Image (cartoon, rainbow, N blue to C red):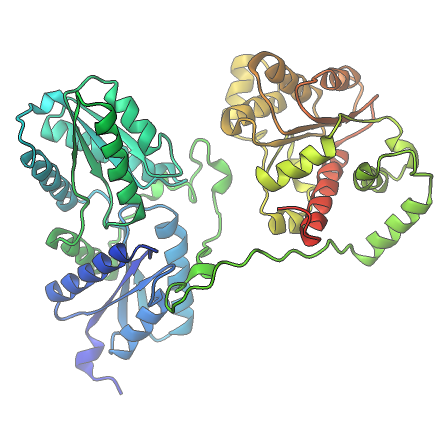
Amino acid sequence: MVSNKHAERLGIVVAGHGSRDPDAVREFEALVELIRARAPNDVVTHGYLEFASPTIADAAVANVEAGARQIALVPGVLLAARHAKNDMPAEMLALARDFPDVDFHFGAPMSLDPKLLQLAQERIVAAEAASPHTVRRDETCLVVVGRGTTDPDANGEVAKLARMLEEGMGFGAAYVCYSGTAQPLVADGLRRAALLGYRRMVVLPFFLFDGVLVKRIYAAADALAEREPGIEVLKAGYFGVHPLVADVMIERAREAVAGRAAMNCSLCKYRVQIVGFEQQVGEPQRAHHVAVRGLLASEPVAPPQPPVYNTYVPHPIEAESFRIIAAGRDWSTFPPEQLTVLQRIVHTSGDFHAVDDFYFSAGAIDSGIRALLRCRRVVTDVTMVQTGLKRALLEELGIDTWCGVHDRETHLMAEQYGITRSAAGIRRAWQKFGNDVVVAIGDAPTAIAEAARLIREHGWRPQLVIGLPVGFVGTRESKDELRRCLQVPRITNSGTRGGSPWAASVVNGLMIDALNGLASGGGS
């Protein structure tokens, strides 16, 4: 039995990301020791999402075994991005199922706490004091480097920190860049900041601990200083092991148990429609670190194994259909690499002659397969094409799909430019993704017309354009226009026949060939 004294103790699980860099792990564990010293009446354990050990689950078990029945899982991260919004909550939900008699509470990330602003101020002043030169703040540009995520809310917090420090400390300017994922990246950001003409630049990594990324930031700052001898480049320290950091994390644990954990849900892309991220509303909370959880716990670490792919296995009825299709006409007049796509068109249309007017530009099949495996993104003109893509193949190959026809910005663009929503969706895809896409158009001739215009006038070079709309208004003409787009690989047909299922079938055929190639060792 657990004593009442132990039952009343608060458990704090400090959840870190984990790192391959031993310096980062050592500093994180030193911070945990500092938290224990500053919260002596609580049970404090720690765990990691990936690479390092113990895992978060191990840390929770240790907390329960020490007698805690109220446990706050506190993210050892600065900002609320995917780790704090998806991965760590998913870990906590699993723990709640495993320990039904324990009350688990999820704490908010550290965010822009006033204590962290004070610590940033300390780091900047220390960097300035280490210089032999005296330079006014209004002649100094502050460059804040964030981690960079796919979450605009978290990236925006880095910009907010930079602005608060700029105004609060009187810098002449502040510039924001990121170590990865978001733009501009560190080297580009430092070059651009140097063009602002300030005598001094202070580079502040908005990071908790040392590690691979912080080392890269400092290396980029050194490289800039060497290239730009007229600018004094100072490297401020990251936050590190500090009483203010420990106190913020203890506060987050107390807030969690009290039900006062504050998250910026009003701008969370998983809860509300944020401009440009509308499709991620309601995305399930799933941990994506399972494969590397505790990876570095034992030495030597085995090298990562390449994924194993299995040949596509159709449903028995589907297999019988394709046996009939293969025997139903003479296929010897078609190039072998086109047969998977063409036979799927016959399967979709129920018509052996549907493929007689198909057009493939030279190398279109190979370009499409390579693009699916390299770019891993398919853009469609309408959701019917998107929903017609085989979900199992998309998941196994790791391919994302995007259709903007129903997004608010697409509606606004259609109204402002006087174009159809399908055309506006294609224009948005050009803006969002650039050339690294396969475009599949199965409904709107205007979408083909817009793609052709962007290819012709603005240098867009999607990896493959599939144009198979159905209808009588502008359909023939749009397909002819696509056929004349010599700058890109393309698949289309003549006449009025086609439709969303046809466009989806072409992509499905390409994915089947891509998967079979991987399974046989012929692709990567």
